[in-house]
Length: 335
Image (cartoon, rainbow, N blue to C red; front, top):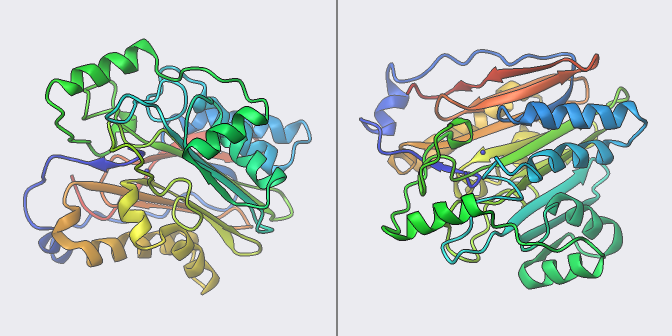
């Protein structure tokens, strides 16, 4: 989801009025039936390709989603994930990540510093500690102890954006900044996340989510991304879900756990994503005017779901033949 996550300048009219009238956008069904890897945003296409390549070489599902997440983490042109992520308001780049499989194995880190591949540290938490989440200084010390290379993640471009932002310290993140080109400190390109879901031909599932969080966020802020049941959730025989957008709104409803629970109750992945988005709109009313939240879901048979509050959310789907296509997500509201 800028911030991962997102606030646009106010749109006209109340959210309640939009829900009740012609402000609703048609919900078109997502591509379904042959999906192997699913991820958020246009830059998810390169991540999917890396994940597919890892599977093709005999890697596990965890290997695949980790490899996919590492692509945007290392991309200096992506200011919402990993290296070159925009810092918090004190100038520190802090990373959040989670990795999970359908056997209940999970590891996560939050407010990690000086380590490019937060997703790999999260996996190490899963595999080498009795815990599921390490945060802040503890997460950074663990990464150091495990031999992860330590480096400054604040690139000159990201530092300049932060110093420009300090002139006004006006925090105004914008929806769908992941797909904007021109950086505006405190506005576009100020977040988000990448969430990935993958399955194998037997229907097993795994997922990953990684982000540098909201640009110029308060120090210590953690969004939904590293929280199991909010940024990511996977359940054997049922499905997996990941989220993007304003993390605070996802955590209010334990969004991905809710999506998977709806699938378990008999909804399709698409209907489950729609239910979660509509619930946020009903719960929050005018408070989510201009806010973006989106969900992706994947079931063991390769059916997918994708739905968001506002137009502009995109997602990448890779089929069993390795073909990757970027789609536009259906939205509850029109622009």
